[in-house]
Structure formats: C-alpha cells, structure tokens
Image (cartoon, rainbow, N blue to C red):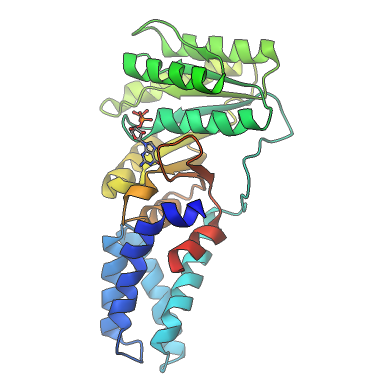
Length: 304
Ligand code: GDP
C-alpha cells in the first residue's frame, strides 16, 4: 500500500524507537515514560501535545500499576487515535466535494516551497479523474515560477489555469478564476496565493481582498481555506500554522513530504494544537501521491 510505503520513515523514526525503549523491560515505569516523552518530542509531535499524551498515559499507568510494556503500544495508539479524533471528526476515505453547493471554492495558503503548487495540481487531478470540472487560479503573482508551474500542471491534467501578469493584483486573478468557474459551471475552483509571511498585515489584507471578490459570486466563498505545511520541517511547520491561523480562518490542513521525514509527528501535534482537521497528506512528488487523511489508516501505518 502506498500509504504504508510513504510513511515508512515516519514509522521507523517513531515506533522502532519505542520498541527499543521497552526492550528487556516488563513494567511501564517513569524511565520509560521519560523516554517516550523524548521520542514524541523528537518526532515533532510538539511539546504541548506530547505533555498531553504523556499525562493521559500516566493516568492509565496510575490506575494499573503493573501495566505491561507490551501494552504500551496499544495504549499509545489509542491515545493518538483519540487525540486525532478530537479534531478530525470526519473519516475521509476518498476525495469528495460537498453536494450542497457548486462550484466549491478552495483558497490555498502556505509559504513558498512547502508543496503548495504540487498539492493543488494533485488535488485538481484527483477531481478531474472523477469527471469533475476544475478551474485553477494562479493568484501567486509574485513568483513567475509559481504561475508557470501551475500552468504546467494545468496542461498536464487538462485543467484551465487563470493567470495574469507578474505583480498584478492577486484578487483580480481570484475574481477571474471564480468568474470563469461559475460561467463554465465548474465543480471546483482552487486558487493559489502568494506564500509571504514576513509582512503579516499585507498577507491578511491580501487574503481579505481575495475573499471579498470571491464573495461577489458566492456569499459563502471561499468554502475552504487550506493551509499547506511541509511535514518535514518540524517546528517551522508549527510556526507557520501559528502565523497563518492568525492571518485568516484556516479550515483544513494539507501536510506534505511525509515520505521524506522520520518526523511525521507533526500531523498529530499540529492538528491538536491548532484544532484544525488534517484533510490531505502528501507522500511523494508524483500526481497520485496525495491522499485524503484517514486517521485510522494513519495510526495503523504508524504501528505496523
Ligand atoms: P510551493 O513553492 O509551495 O508551491 O512548492 P512546490 O509545489 O513547488 O513544491 C516544492 C517541492 O516539493 C517540489 O520539488 C515538489 O515536487 C516537492 N513536493 C511537494 N509535495 C511533496 C511530497 O508530498 N513529497 C515529496 N517528496 N516532495 C514533495
């Protein structure tokens, strides 16, 4: 299975360490809990979430003083699943669009290099494959490369890409993309944005403006604000989540590059800390390497 393959490094980093910690010991003691804490932190679960998990396990150890180390796997798995459930109530098994409105409009945010363009291309490809009509908007007008790359994806998967010249108004691109999508009777419109974080006020104003022009067509647009984070960047991903959630109402996360990291704990920590569901995970560079986030599958793959 590609999910297992994609997450192999995550698994190795996380749970082979756990088995080394408990090797030769039969009872869960403080030393094991300390080491577990360290494993979680070095796996980028984040301090807050790690403390939460350890506390929950401590409570269970307190209830059952002779808790066997062979059960630690199961308990940790249950606690991670529980934690993920708190922010990921939906269990996604396939790429779906809501049936309540059309077109569905997704605004994509995230800093440069995290895999934003690639994620948009992969996502568009999935819906295109289902026979859905998709329009992309290249509103990252600050980087010629971003526009070119999105156009390339458009050609590759036969999806129209709305783009203007460099340094033009991103909200004008968003306007034209939504206009085109509405005129075409499209099912899905995905709009890329510039990934600048250094001036938060600018970012905020730009996103407000983009949202406002979208709302001229559909008052409830954008239906989703998807934040793309690179799962291999650990604390940077946490920082970006913090900044973007301050700048706009992020409704879902796409966490990329989980194939290239031994630190997939970001998925657990970020979802918990920011109370935002993880909707997609990227496990490679190819068009098929985007998956809907299924928490049961994710936890399973961690413990296989
Ligand atoms: P952007 O600047 O945020 O738009 O980032 P890009 O979409 O250009 O991606 C940056 C690089 O990351 C590219 O080389 C992508 O192929 C690569 N990339 C994106 N997603 C993934 C992923 O899930 N796994 C791996 N291994 N690489 C990825």
